[in-house]
Image (cartoon, rainbow, N blue to C red; front, side, top):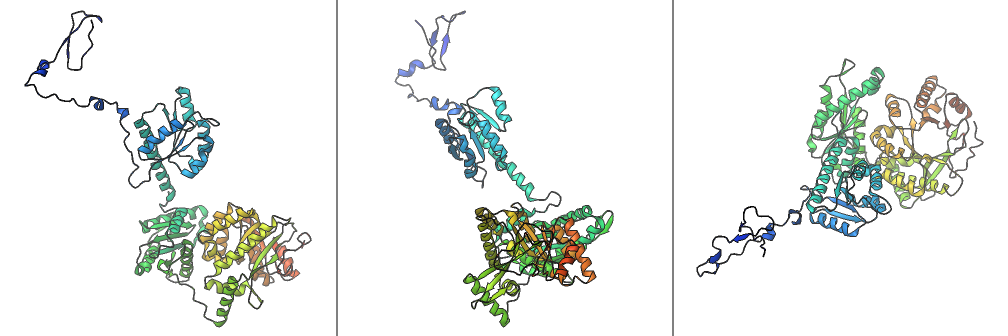
Length: 621
C-alpha cells in the first residue's frame, strides 16, 4: 500500500526516522468531512491555477512600439531555415515591428538597399556564405557600417561567440530564445542605433567651431523648401577686404578671423538657419520674416560687425560686411533661383554706400530691337533652330589632343545666323538662358557620345551661365547623361564667364564639387585681373583660364602686357592652363607665346565652323 502527496494544504504524518518507504498517513483539512452535510457551503470552483502558474515565457509578447512619432522598427531576418525565420518574424511583427525575410545570404545586401533596415537578425551557419562573412561585407559598406547585426543561432561554442563578435556583430542570441528576450534585445539595439544616428546627424549638421549649419545641410534644407516657400527672406553676408587681410597676415590668420566672423553670424542669427557658403560669404534664411523687416534685419547683420572688434596676431581689426537680400514672396521655382537672386543683390550691395541692397529683377526688354530678338529666340526654341559652331583651341607647343570651343548660333525664320552676343543678353533678361544652356549642353553631350563610335576624342568647351549650373537637379541631370552615354569627364569643360562667376560664385562652387568627382573640368573665361577676379581664381577648382580679349587687343601697351604676364604666372602657380583668345595675327600669337601662354584661339588658327575637322597634328606654332 502506498500514498501519494495530496494537494497543497494537506497534512502528512510519518513516523520518526521514516525513509522513502515509510508509510505516511494523510490528515484531511479541517471541515473536509462537512462536504456532504446539508448545511455545508456551496462548493467553490478554485481559481484557474493553470493560468496563474503559466511560466513567464508562455505569456504573449508585449507590443513594443517605436518612440512616438518614429516609424516602426525595421528588421531584416537572414535565415535559411524557413521555420526558424517565420518564428522570429511572427514574434517581431506581433510586437509592432516591420520585418522582411531573406533566405540566401548572397541576397542580403540587395535587400538592405531596398528595405533599409534598422537591424539585421541573422543565422550563423548558412549555405554559400557564413554569417561572419556577410557581416564583414556589411561593415565594409559605408552606408551600413553602423547598422546593428544580431546573430540568432544554436551554436553553443564559446569560441564561436568570440569570433562572431570579432567579425563586427553587436550581439549573439542562443537558440532556443524566449520571445520576450528576443524582443528586448532587438528593441534595445534599434533604439540605441537610432539615437546614435541622430547624434551623428546633429554633428554633421553644425560646424564644430562656429555653430553654423554646414553648407551641405543648409543647401539640402533650402532645396526642400522650394517652390512652396513664398514668404520670408534669404540674406547673403560677405566680409569685405579679405584679400588685403590675407596678403598682410597670411592664410592661417585669415582663416582664424573668418571663423570668428562665423561665430558672430551664428550669434546674431540665433535660431534662424545660417551657414558659411564659402571663405567669406554667409547665408541666413528666415522663412517667417515679414516683408517690412527685411531691410531692418539686413542692417542688424551688417551692424553686428561694425560694433565688434576682433584680433589678428594681436592687432585689433573691425570687419566690414555687405548684405544683399531677396524677398521670397517673388516666388522661385527652386533654391538655386533664390540663391542666385540673393547673390545678385549682394553684388548691388557692394556698390552701395550703406553696404545693403535688395534684389531687383532685371527690367524687361522694352526696345523694339530687343523685342524682335526675343521673338526670334522664342521661335528658335520652339522650332529647334539653335546650332553649334566650333573653333579649335590649339597648343602653342603642339599636341594631338583635339579641343574645340562650342559657340551657340541662332538661325531665324529667314535663315540668318545670330551669334551668342546678340541673343544671350536678351535671353537672360527674359529668363530663357537656362533653356538655351540646356539645349546647348544636350547637343554637346550628343556629340561626345557619337565620338565613342569613331576614333575622334575631342574635348569640348561648353559655355554655361552660372545660374543654370546652380539650378536644382542640373548637376544630377548632367551626371546622369554622362553615365548613360558613357562619356569621359575629361572630355567636357564647362566654360563660365568671369562676370557671371563673380556674381554667382556660391552656386558655381557647389556645382564644381559635384562635377569634379566625374572628372569634368571648369574654365573661367573673359578673365581680366582685379582683386575680386584674382581671389576667385584662387577659390574655384579651375583647370583652364581664358584671358579677356582686352589683353590680345592691347598687347602692345607695356602695362597691359606686364599685367597679362602676371596673370599667366599666377595661373601656372595654381596649376592652370591659360588660353589666349581673339588672336587675329602672328605678331599677337608670338607675344602671347613669349609670355607663357599655353593655348591660342582665334581667326588666326581657324574661324568658327560647323564641323570639327581641324588638323591639330600640323598646327605647331
